Length: 108
View 1 (cartoon, rainbow, N blue to C red):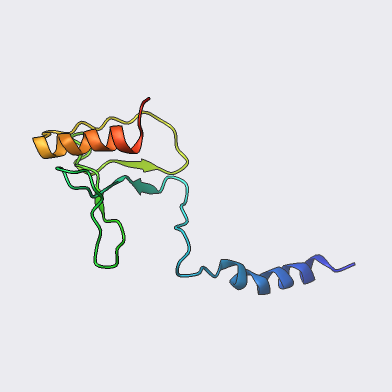
View 2: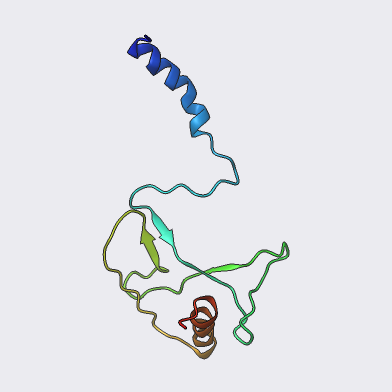
C-alpha cells in the first residue's frame, strides 16, 4: 500500500499535465463568470450570414440593456431573473430579430 504522502506527491506531479489546456480548447467558466450573449451577423435585407475573410461566421455583441448599460450576459451556474430592455429598435434591427426568430428557431 502506498502511503498518503506518496499519493500526494504523485498527484502533485501529474497536476501540470491535467491543468494544461490546448489553445483550441473551449473556454472554461467559473461559478458566477459572465457569459456574454452574441448574435450571428446577418444581412438585414436577405438574412444571410456574414463571414470574414477566413469564411467564418461573424458574431456581434447583443445590444446594450438599459438596466445594466452592458450587452446581455448570463452568470455561469447562477439562477435568477434578468431584464434586458433595448432602448431603440430601428427597422434593420427589427428585421434581423425576425430572421433570428423565424429562421434560426422556427416556432412551427
